[in-house]
Length: 308
Image 1: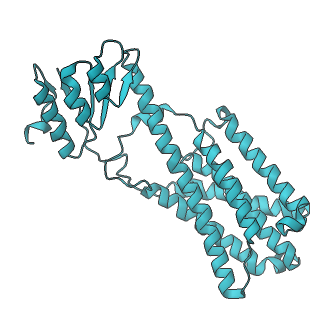
Image 2 (image 1 turned 60 degrees about the vertical axis):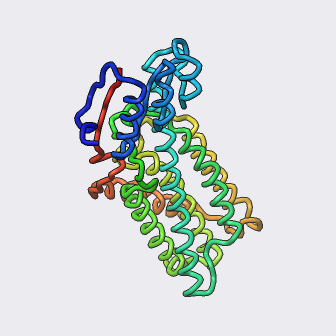
Image 3 (image 1 turned 90 degrees about the horizontal axis):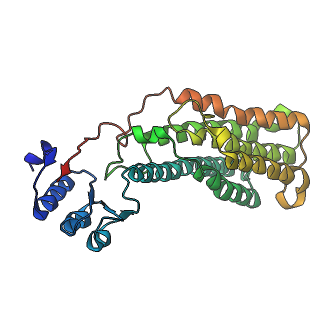
């Protein structure tokens, strides 16, 4: 256990030496990957968190003991595997951050309104609609983000690191607090501010809430970077889903009055809803100036050892 911190190359090693090295690294908390092509590599390949064997030169025993088989025996394929693996993990985090923001905001708004006035601004059908477009279309939009080279500059995720990081909590809380604040103001003072009846006011709350999620979807694309539009032109599916969500929301508000319990809005009211929702962009930009350390990508020990 003392030697393992200084070993970088272990030559002329036996299968037991390889296995012992993997076990010691794992005890130290490292996530261990092992490459091999021979039968004697099988114990270490099986013990490692990720075992990679060669598809052409590798033996059947080595392949059966591995998690990943490199079919072309080209080590650059490992880079592709790592990039896509990190991309999937990152996309899952984006969606979790986005979905938690929606749920926290909706829960608090309805809870506060129900306690204070005995009525909820977001009806069951409207909440079902929000979950439908955000769970399905939102998930599809964020899950289709392509991997970038920036992912390869980050340290591996620690074995015990939480899925929801401090960076995610920072972004989530900032957006949720903004949405709760502005929508509760609309709920209690919207009729006075806009000079409308209760039904129109409730529609303004619902429409603003949905549009806030649409704009916040752009923020969710980049959890750490301030430039949330970076590479967005390349993701045609994301832009298409955003456009589809907006069209469906317009149909919901303007044409499905009885089903959605909404009232038609004039152009000034639509502009007000869009402005309220668009404020999530500068808020998301400003909140990223708040320094947050994340053990997920920082201060992790790096250790590269090779066995021959």
